[in-house]
Length: 336
Ligand SMILES: [Fe+2]
Image (cartoon, rainbow, N blue to C red; front, side, top):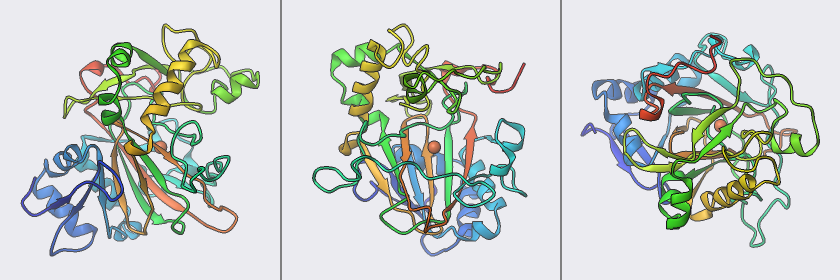
């Protein structure tokens, strides 16, 4: 890494993650210029931090959104242009199409996730562990190759105590599996599918008729234990209720459906992966940027009071180094 950056590890309250700072300088512009002078610095800092980097004080990006795309290019060669993919246009930034808008305000109008039931754990804490906490996923795992990195800017966060983002360390969770479970997941594949297609666990349990899938949105197989192309470490790579295919999956070659043995193993793995010892909870401050590595972390969003709060977050996704398992594969989400 460039001598000029400081990396403080781990993030507060977690066993992984890092805060990357540029001492003696402030603001997004100076940070990006330094990163461009040391082209590998950010990729290395991300790998050294177990796949999660926090940058603070980046609020200038809200007025100059092209800076977020520029920062994102430090993490890989392809920054997704959301106008060219399946994304509804009202969720894409007007002038910088690499930015996907996550907001409960118009025009995106995305509601917050549901609150867990009950809202707190028995000892009064924020629930993080599946299945009490739901919504754990890795971004766009319904594509092959899936994106490597997501970059998320807090333009207008909600007050502390709500609207957090949770991250679970798939590499630490894999390393802590019993030898028998490790052997069981090596070589196993999950079947991932785009949310909202009638193939989620809830939809299947409710007996919904799934909608026909286009050739560019078919469920995709992904390794359950994914090898990271930079670190070489294996990590659990899974989603749960909303982003696995509960008709033909969730796990390939195992009994399908919500009551099959594939579901039993997925529950066991997700419950293991999201234990508090593997989880970091991020409380957002305006101008925070979190960079996460979808190849080795899963994440979940939490509830916020949308009747009182307006939340605006911007995300980019970066691709280009998915690993040997995806070598020279064509993009599944672009119709042939
Ligand atoms: Fe996400």
